[in-house]
Every structure is written in structure tokens, then in C-alpha cells.
Amino acid sequence: MTASSVPSAPSVSRKPALSAQQPPPLHLPELARRLATEYLPEPPTPRRAAEPLDGLIQTILSQQNTAPITRRQFEGLKAAYPRWEAALADGPDGIEAVLRAAGGGLARVKAGYIHALLAELDETRPSLSLRETRDLSDEAARALLEGLPGVGMKTASCVLLFDLARPAMPVDTHIHRIARRLDLVPAAWNAVKVERWFAEVLPHDWATRYTFHVAAIRHGRQTCRARHPQCDRCVLRDLCPSAALLGPGEAGAGQTAMLRP
Image (cartoon, rainbow, N blue to C red; front, side, top):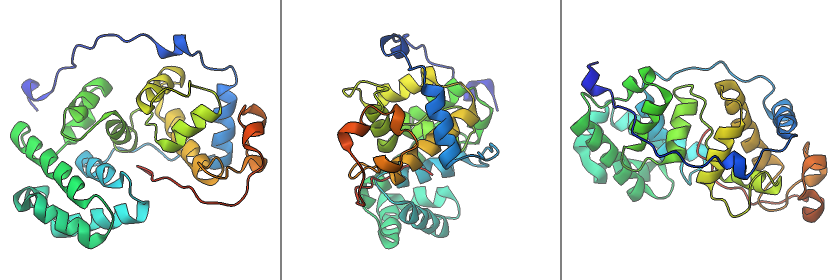
């Protein structure tokens, strides 16, 4: 890899620390410990994907999709296009047809994102690959990812966490909801601000952030649901100011789609 192929870290204007505006509660480590014990007592060994581009495309597919549909769509793409160059050549209509055959919504939108992503890599990189991100700093890898079409902060954070074993902290709807209910962050904060806050207050290591991310999502799916939260069996009940307001849980739906895993 030549020096010119490695993107330099952009000059970033320093934003005020959100943790100064909203200091983390003293019991945050206890929250993290309980979630880990309940949902992920043995975190996996960190690994880096051989081709992070695959992970990025899976993450795009997973948005507003269930995990089984995401898997079917990705497997359909890999079967139709053993190399991503073939998907680029087939165009957005061909990609859309493959996604529709696998089921799931937003096929046209996601096909457009994937084709635009591949076209950008074809124009700017030596090959249709993101393997070089494995050797970049966290900041440079994020800058490269977020510079691609359709890739925002959360999508980049998922690739960093799951495919590059970097200490990112993506915030999905489950984690956002839990953070508000636990009064960790102001209710008016959006997911971007909540992610920035967690990035400031959680220890900067992969295992801690991976465990918190996955455990909190499982907590949101199984217990702290959007509708009918199961407060009566919540491991955080005595630390949650919302428990008394939400009341005892009852069986119900209200699941939201997840990015990964």
C-alpha cells in the first residue's frame, strides 16, 4: 500500500464533551456488569474479517431487516456475484432483483446504496475491497468508512466493532431506548449524541464495548421492550427510575429491527 492510498485523518473541530454536560452515573459500571452477567458472560475472542467490505454490505442490508432476511439477502448476493465486480457490472437493477428474490423491504433503496458504494470504491481505491482498513488507525478507518456513500456514523461503528475489532459503540433503537429509560442521557438526545456520550464514558477497549453493545441489545429485545417491558424480571430494576412508571411487564410484541448481530 502506498502512502498516498492511506487517507489522512481529517481535521476535526473538537466538540464539547457530552460527559461534562451529562456526567455518567456512579452505578454505570454496575449496570454494565449486570448486563454482561445476564446476557453475555463470555464475550467471544476479537477477530478481524478477511474482507470488511462484506461486513459493510451486510450492515447496509440489516437496516430495518430481521437477521434471517439479512442472511438470505447476503447469501443471495454472494451466490449471484462471487466477486463484487460482478455486482457493480450488473447495476442497481440487477442487485435489486437479487434482493427482492430473497425477500425483505427497501430492496430498491439498498440496491442503490450498494451499487453507489461499489462504484465509489471502483473510482477511488485500487480494488473493490476494504482490506486496507485493517491496517489503519481507528480514526482513519472511520474516516474512510464514513466517506463512502450511504455510510453514516452507526453503520461505520458496526463495521469497526464487528469486522475490525475496534472499540466502537454503535447505538441502535434498543440501546437508545434503554439509555433514556435508565436516565443515562437526556430524552431529547438523538442516537448520534448518545453514541458520542457512550464513547466518552465507557472504557476504551473492544471487549467492554462489544459486551455492553450486545448485552444491551439482548436486554432490549427480551426485557426492556418498546412495548410491554418486562420490568418484574429486569436485572436493572432497582437502578432504573422508569421501572415504577412502566409497571410490571406483560407478554407482548413491539420488537424493532436490529443492525447486527
